Image (tube, rainbow, N blue to C red; front, side, top):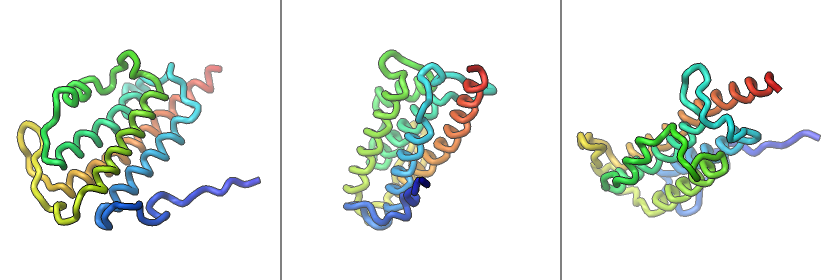
Length: 176
């Protein structure tokens, strides 16, 4: 019996409570969530920090997707990063006790995406062109620029995660 797949998130209609101009951000974040969960099915914790061909590990991509959403949404609120966020940024790509399993990293991503969706629900469209500053250099962006870049960047790393995971699954399948 053939499995019927759902259309991509952006083809399923609007997300409740999110302004029309922010729907693409919400759709991309939810697509990231679905894709990452599908990609990570059957992936062993033992492979999480392997770097095929010296490239970033699957663990890095999972940490980075969550982290970039957190950081860019923080800037979109007009806030600076906290010391905790700066420490998490420095630790991306490194396992640390209690935060080093596929299950933990997926739960952390899910929680971050839910927080982002809540922020989108509370972001009025008339704020989208307001200037926001990024990083210590205070580079100019806008609320919309930050939110859209968070969505785009999460999709970029989801693609990189797909390649990394598929290479590692193939590698380990060949050795068993």
